[in-house]
Amino acid sequence: MITLKRIYSETNLFNEVCFKEGLNIILGKYSSQRKEINGIGKSTLVRLIDYCLLSQIAKNKFFNIKKFPFLEGHNVVLEFYLEDKSYFIKRWFDKKNILFGNTDGSNVNEYSEKELKSVLSEIFFKTYDSIYYDSKWFRSLIKFFIKDDLNHQDRKVPYNFVHPSTPKNLVIVYNFYLIGLPNKNLYQLEQLKQELKEINKVRNKIVDGLEEETGKSIQELQSELKEIKEKVQMLELALTEYDFIDTYKDIEDRISYLTNEISKKLVEIQQLQKKLDLIQESYSVRIEVDIDEAVKFYNILSTQLGGLLKKTLEDIINFRKAIADNRRKYLAEREREIKDNLNKAWEDYRKLEKERQKLYKILDSKGNFDIIKDTYQKLLDEATAYKHIENIMKEIDKWSNKILQLEEEISELYFTIVKELQDNKERISDLSLSFRNTIRNCAATSEGSYLAIEATQKKENPIDIKIDIPKSLSYGREKLKILVYDLTLFREILMHERPVPHFLIHDGVLHGIDMKTKIRILNSSYKLLEEFNNNAQYILTFNEGDIIDGYEGEKLLFELDDHIIVKYEDNPERMIFRREF
Image (cartoon, rainbow, N blue to C red; front, side, top):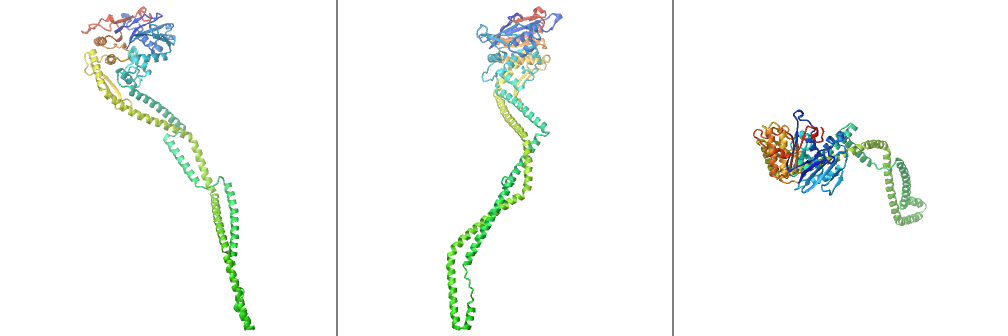
């Protein structure tokens, strides 16, 4: 539990202000001649507290020594309680480093803004009851507890106490943290949404750049790349059907070699055939004498001589036939060997001739092949030119796949978040009842008022917070709606003793609200703090005359003067910096 102890300046820039338990009033008093003058100190005091808690707006806009040179050399010290220990934060307006430590002088160190923000983040907020907290939220959450008049005027949506441009899901994450509702998945959803947004930006930038470079849409480029790839693949397939050596010179050399080998084979075949013919010729018996004619001739001379000649010639012929038969048997093996060699020679010849004819065919198709080769080369050149486009498109595909993955994760988270909300219906119902009770205490009626936390049909924003109050309270209605919502959340924090600040500062929150309602608001706040034994602080700023006790029968339940912690007037000597600021 954190409450404020005091704020002061070691350099006497302003007078010390001590904070009380319970209701704290920072009062402004104006003379009738100078009513509503700015800069007497109410909002400035609130901003000094915020400055100590590392507000960049307070630093840059309100305490910038270039704008306000008189701040040079001065400092401001804020002391606060954390449980039973007292701490201080000391800042100079013209120095970067900040002192922080225990007020008893122990553990005092010098920090940069970034370092101290990390330290204070762990002190002021933490994960509790499985309700997630991220250290980056420190300043966003502090804005709920400290609201100056400008911050309050800019606030249009009651639950958006951060900034109008803050994503809705993230604002609800902060509110769920304060309320005590599950918020981790909703925060993760917002992180994924932001990641998806950035990835879409990257992808769209790449797409736009490519389309601008080529003058063509992504769809057109995809179609062209596909067509080029298909053509190259077809030509590559066609070229593989040609069985050729690396160059046509090699083919010509090969044909010359084959022709020479074919010639040799033909000579070999001719020789073998001749040998075969000779062997086969040796198998026949040549009869050169006509026996009958010879016998007839010799019979004329002598019958006895003719008979003797016939017998002699038949014996000779039979002898030659016997010799031929014997030779045929002898040469049969040789004939088979020559035939085998002849058949092999013919087979070799046919192979050589077939290969030669194939090479001749390649040479004959050289003209067609050159055309194919030229076309192929042109396509390769075109494909190479498209290579960087293809690489870019691969990059686009990578981001597109990441987008699909994130969209799927977002969809899954949506259902988880909705289920968590359903599981906490009772808690939400209690919060809604507390809101109606607060509005009844502040405005005497709660009819028509509601605070609803509901699931939506939108995956981008699965949760919505709806707030309304009676339409009869038209005067200051929007401001009252904001104030009542803050008080409802503050009561929720105190009731469940959340490990967050137990102080709430409202600057200018009563402007525009009717007198009767303002008295009721103060009484309701007073009773709220009493309910929790004043172990909390509600710090308000308003002007003297803004509250008229006893207005239309409405009376304050406490003495106003008992709760004024400081009063600033429109006299320069009684302003916060003793000058108009």
